[in-house]
Structures are given as structure tokens and as C-alpha cells.
Image (cartoon, rainbow, N blue to C red):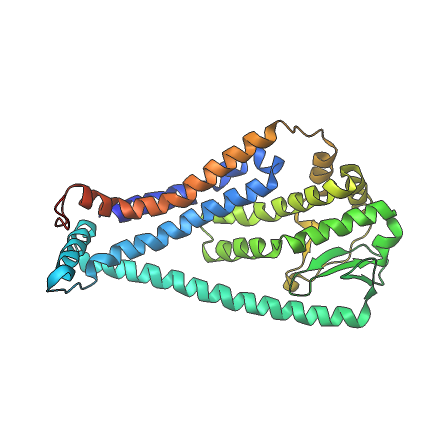
Length: 324
């Protein structure tokens, strides 16, 4: 029962890491890497739970082969299956079945919610095209409203929506920076990352990792879009636009549409980051840390579930298939 124990420990450790990971300052210095870290940890937790269920079910799978080369392979599979077995195997296998079934059900619910969200976006897109007019640039629509609103609607025909209040308050370079920020959300398909973190948080509300990821990933998505826009239009132009928009009354964005907008993070924190001097020397070091961390966390569940099988082979529990 080595694999289920290792996977359970891995899930518990990963699931408890949310508050500790939130304290890592470099995640916000490199938001793209930060998003990957949160996604890798979430994958580690989910795959550990799923593979633990599979490992608990494995010894109960019937293996019947009785001739030739298939018999040798069947004997090897049977030996490995025994290495995964445990006392009270019937109860343990039932727990594995329930675990896997629960995760499959979660996947189906997530797909259904995604379809409902796409339908809501389609309805809102149709409504906007009735009341809005084409704005500056492809895919930009302007709504007559003296309050400020700037957000994007993802989809096959992504839209950037701004109000006349935004157009009137911003200079041309500031407006271009805001539009670039929203387009960065669309090109990066940031709605998928946010939707995934939201679904997992609701499915596992008691897991600190997933609960914290649902809070932090939207903030990192905003920072990533800031970086993309600032690379083209300048950090100060975007910072000035954020300050101007924060000082004006805002139009609420429909929560059911799945729209991405800047309310996910406090304006002050974003402005301070944009106006602070950047340390380019940390770039390669941060990238290396992210690559190593994501790789290690992603493969850990696979290593844990394979450990008993590898151990069985190493100790010659399987019959020798070759004479050398």
C-alpha cells in the first residue's frame, strides 16, 4: 500500500501549501511564473487524489491469463498488483472507486458550468452589440455611460468593452495601454485559468491551496496583462490610466458573464509595481526557479504512483522475461 500512502501524503502537503506560497514575493515579480506555480500545485493535489484512488482500485482488477508469453506478463502484473494491495482490500478498493467517481463527477460538473458560462457570454455579447458602437481598434466596443468600465468578454469572437467615461478621461496613449491590457487577457486565454481555479475552489472549499489559488490567480492574471501592455505602451502610461480610472465612478461588470476586468486587484498595488524600478538581473534566476519547481511538482504524483511497481521489478518479483 506504498503508493496510496505516498500519494495521500503528497495531496495533504500540497493542499496545505496555499498560505505559504502566497508569501513568496517573486510570484508577483514574475506573474506568468506565479500562475504556472499555482497551476502545478493544483495539478499535484488533484492528480495525487485521483492516482491514490486508482492505486487503491488496482489490486481488485481481475487479471486472468493462462498461456504463453501473456502468462508471463500476467504473472508480472499480478505480482505488481499484490505489491499495491493492503489489508481490508474490499473496503480500500471501494474507497478508491468512490474517489475516482467523485473526481469524474467533478469534471462533468466543470464542463457543464463552462457551457453555461459560454452561453451567458454569448447572450451578453448579443446585447452589447445592440447598444454599443464600434470603438478604436478591431474588436473594441464603446457603451454610452459617463461612468468608467473597461473589460473583455472571452470567446471565439472576443470583445473589449469600454465606456464613454473611459474614452473621455484618458489620453490616447493611456487608452491604448488599457486596450492592450484587455487584449492581453484575450490572447492569453486568461479566462480559462481563472475559471479552473474558481471551479476547484468551489469543489474543494476546505483545501487551503485551492482556496488561496482562487484568490491569487486573478491577481496574477492582472499583473501579467499589465506587463504585456506596459511592454508596448510604457509602464507609466498604464499607471496613469489606472489612477485616472480608479478616481472615477465605475460601472459594475455582470458577474455571470465571466468577463475579465481590473477589479480583481487593488489599483494601488498595481500602480506601485508599475512605477517601481524593475530588476532585470532576476529574470533568468526566476525563470530557472519556476521551471524546476513546476517540473518537480508536476511529476511528483507520477513518481509516487509508480514507486511500488518499480520496487517490485527491482526486487525481481516479476518473472524474468529475457535470459540476460
